[in-house]
Length: 208
Image (cartoon, rainbow, N blue to C red; front, side, top):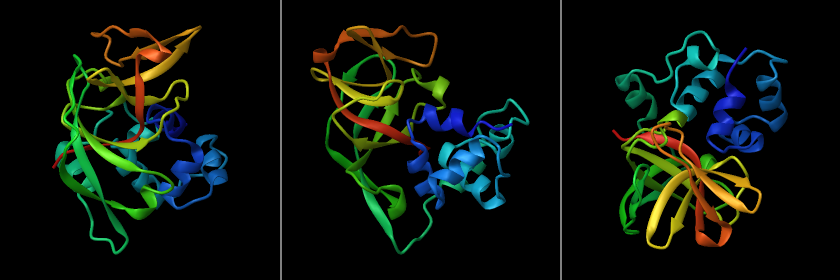
């Protein structure tokens, strides 16, 4: 039993995308999720880095989701790579009450080239605790792939006038629900024309 599918879907990552992050084929990811084959140790280590959780959590061996902070920092620290790409960090995403995002580049974060393929990517900083149920903590930097369309059930950065929000998006008949994962906050119900999609969240990293 493992939580790969649950964690992948929570991050809005497809099997093909996860396969490229792991350096394996989509079919291998499917087999890992369905437990047709065992998870190699190197793949399991990489999964802890991608999802920011312990190996025990991935394998359903305990209920402790986050790794200890020192271990997370060590695992997520940028490693020198010849093919690293510098991805810009822009503005801030408010994951609690809406706020204005200042879309200025404040830093660059090195990412392996294989993790930012086929698209335009950027990081945004999370402020607030609205998405903690998806293990996206305040102070995290979310890696966002720019897009203008939505896929039901994935996490997006969206703009409503001058406000930028981080929410899971779900269609409800002719309306759109912008859903937080912290039960202390209520969903926002809007019409599709009331907001613009900035991009889809593919990864969350804690700041060092």
